[in-house]
Length: 219
Ligand code: G6P
Ligand code: MG
Image (cartoon, rainbow, N blue to C red):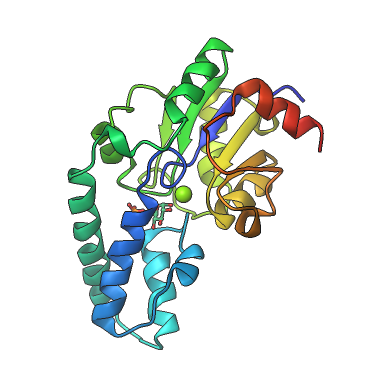
């Protein structure tokens, strides 16, 4: 199958915001007296804000009403947005710009498929808002990864069948979402965590589109 477009997750793939989500959740978990580690954070990656909060509350055996949960989620988001507002282009992850340039050179489409409602703000902060043909973010979907909705919407927007789109993800839930949508997926990060992906790269440094195609086909 010929791949004609790439759909990128944002946090932890294009820009180093995954650490800010972690720090903001950690601050909230500390206030709630719930143990929260980088390992427990893995299951929150790619997952919506309210679902992430639900996971933290559950691990601390805390039951709260809807209003209180919304207040806590808003608190976490305020801290996260504060980090975003101080962010600049130097937090774009290594090799990303060159990879996007290479996709342009090869006439490969580019979209964002992110669960974050802050995706637009983050992209503006790093100056990449105009680099994608299409941005699907958390304000446009109702079902969180591993549901494939966000990636299927991106494929539809790109006017391509899902099989012609390749997803890049740093989260297990995201890899599952891609596969649930019948898309191949490149994991960006550690093979121990992202082993379900069709290919795992540690970053976009030293990789180009032709190399990705070659590696995918040789597996
Ligand atoms: C991304 C991140 C998650 C985050 C989610 C919602 O998928 O990986 O860590 O919880 O977006 O982000 P938001 O900015 O809407 O709270
Ligand atoms: Mg991510």
